[in-house]
Amino acid sequence: MESLPTTGNPAPRPRLVRSVGTLRGAVAATAGTLGCIALAAFGKAPVVGAIFAAVFLLMSWRFWLAGIRVGPDGVRIVGLPGAPRRVPWESVDHFALGPFRGYRYVAHVVLRDGRHCACIGISAANGPNVERRRVEVQRPVDDLNATLAAWRTSAGQG
Image (cartoon, rainbow, N blue to C red; front, side, top):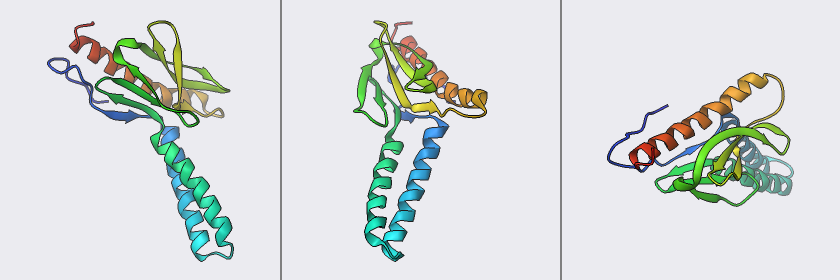
């Protein structure tokens, strides 16, 4: 993880933070899109290939956008099913892992007023190797907490 400067500029470096699983899903959906395009272009069922290519293209697009987008004014939570939600740095208490809709490990933006927003773009699928999956999701959450701490220090809110 890259450390952020803690003096002079309170704005964190803009970037998208997501889990390894979300990145794998984006790559798989992109591969599915390309396969369906090939099926539409060269196969015996071009209409079916085109329909599935459109579905995979939509999935691929959503996977590539999913995660927590860090910006100078706060974070933007981009999940797979819903509309993005912006949260200013001043409203963020911390980032944590917690359950959400059947998943054990999903990143949550915990607000200062006690509410929280889940981000399915930083999550781990249920299944074998649960501890390894938890660690894969904990890394981006730790990165976000370090970014928040650096922002607080540089903004004088330490």
